[in-house]
Image 1 (cartoon, rainbow, N blue to C red):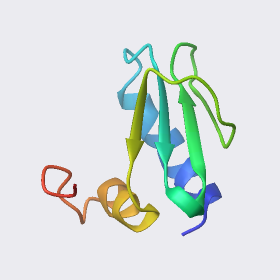
Image 2 (image 1 turned 135 degrees about the vertical axis):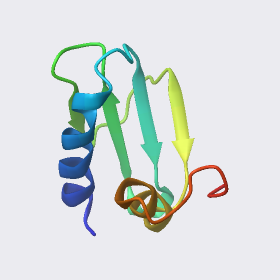
Image 3 (image 1 turned 45 degrees about the vertical axis):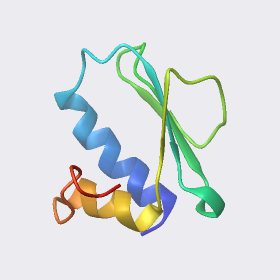
Image 4 (image 1 turned 90 degrees about the horizontal axis):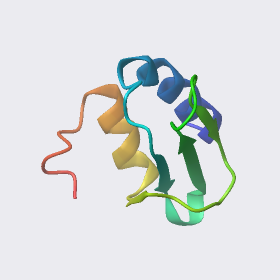
Length: 77
């Protein structure tokens, strides 16, 4: 799955999380990063690096499993 596909899936999921009001960085190491700016509606999701309120670091494969529902996030890390 490419970062574009991950961003597309996140955009669909963000409709369920409109009260986050934070900036979240997803750091996939050498596979890149995604910044979610949920301080605005709709949330802006891009590949820019910036100041985040929270940074989640994991492999892109693990995160794809979490988004797809095949990876339990409680034991993913």
